[in-house]
Amino acid sequence: MSATRHIEEVFQSRPTLEGAGVRLRRAFGHAEVPRFDPFLMLDDFRGETPADYEAGFPWHPHRGMETITYMIEGSCEHGDSMGNRGVIGAGDVQWMTAGSGVIHQEMPAGEQSGRMGGFQLWANLPAVSKMMDARYRGVDACDMPVVEDGVAKVRIVAGRVGDVEGPVREVVIEPEYLDVTLMSDGAWLHPTTPGHTVFAYVVSGDVFFGEEDGGTRVPALSTALFTDGDTVVARSADADGVARGGEARFLLVSGRPLHEPIAWQGPIVMNTDEELRTAFRDYRDGTFARHGSRGGELSPRGE
Image 1 (cartoon, rainbow, N blue to C red):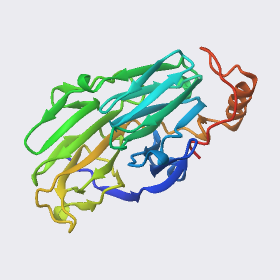
Image 2 (image 1 turned 45 degrees about the vertical axis):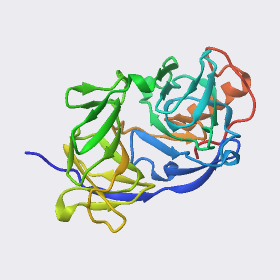
Image 3 (image 1 turned 135 degrees about the vertical axis):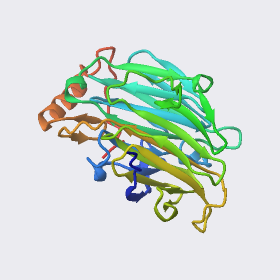
């Protein structure tokens, strides 16, 4: 018997200053741990003024987790201690597994009008994988399939919609990452794995989630955390909260929870305080990243 997921709670994103002075909105973060397990943080770093983002996120370390960067406007130049260099353009995804340690930088740039935008999601790694070798996956926009059914257009980063599977696979937490645009007032139904954590971040417009009384309205720049179940139901909604066919866009993300202790300080996410102390000592000593190291001040990204 099908069980529709309902909204457990809605979180309004909050303005935050990160990196070397990037103005962004944090959808959820340290204060919500462990409710989004295995996910740690989601940042919405869209902006229209270069001064709000051009300082970027200079060289900083990560250990024990994964960072997933999805650009929708402008670009972001990336470099890391593994030797990877490149530019993430609009529609591209960078899935970086920090594992035992990586040092990288991310420097956003706007398009001709100055607009720039994207999202960065942090996903935790289980204890047995925290010290795995670091790895980098860059996925171009042209390699991400798009599925349309008359109600919604869905770009698949990870996971599956019908018979179509996204390009990011073989990830420990079995994630699903979908970019969904609702195009009519019909209901869009998507199956989810019971027991997995599922949330939706509304990028633009308003969305009704659920079936009872037409669902619960979630406005733009808000995150809906769902109860357990095997189906998510979504409809577009206008500013009055009435489904009238207005276009709306949201990210739908899910993953297998880890149910493990979290010791988190800045860009390092481990299981114990002792592991945190070891990580910061390794960084100071220049032995943090197996594929090269760049010491210095830590970026405060994360809490």
